[in-house]
Image 1 (cartoon, rainbow, N blue to C red):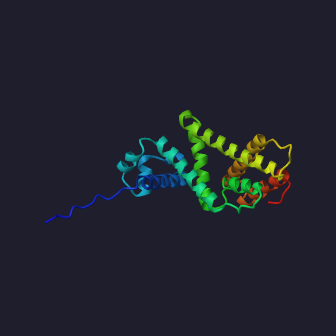
Image 2 (tube, one colour):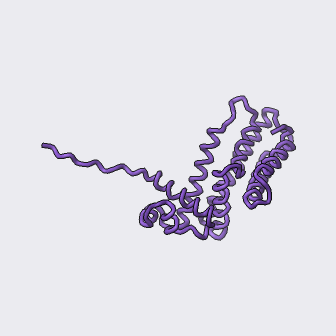
Image 3 (cartoon, one colour):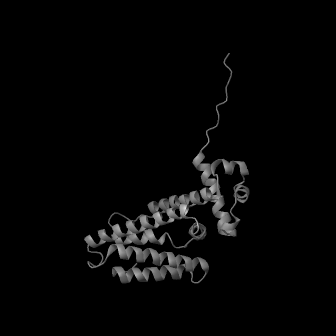
Length: 205
């Protein structure tokens, strides 16, 4: 007679790492990045410190992965919120950059974690490089959209896409910081951003 041999349960390692990263984001958003530790994150995630250490050898690794999770979530929202195929290219730019404004609780949490990560990475060149890479990719993507908008006659022909992309990303990041710090409401931040898009594109948001 054959004996039943239990099949080991398959572990979704990415799911576990994401669970831990989500816990890290809650700790960082509610108590600040200085409260992020293997012990605090484990308690927030409802797992053991040993499990956290199994997936992340250091706080740097946890922080870096948390930012990767945020990027994935933004990408999912962008896909879900993508305008129709006949939408102006300028609308793609707006939908992309508006994701950086804290207009709902998810984006407020992500924004607070991103700010905490920036401060944390400032004195750590090895993880700060990831921030610079992300910024460069975003600016290149926006610049590519602006070139496409120029080709479609949707923005001024004399617009310099690279400079405009840097200006727009700096604007939305600054407005996001002001909204997160309480200097202005998220609605005001969005209105200011749309007004600048009107000036740049000559369009109504």
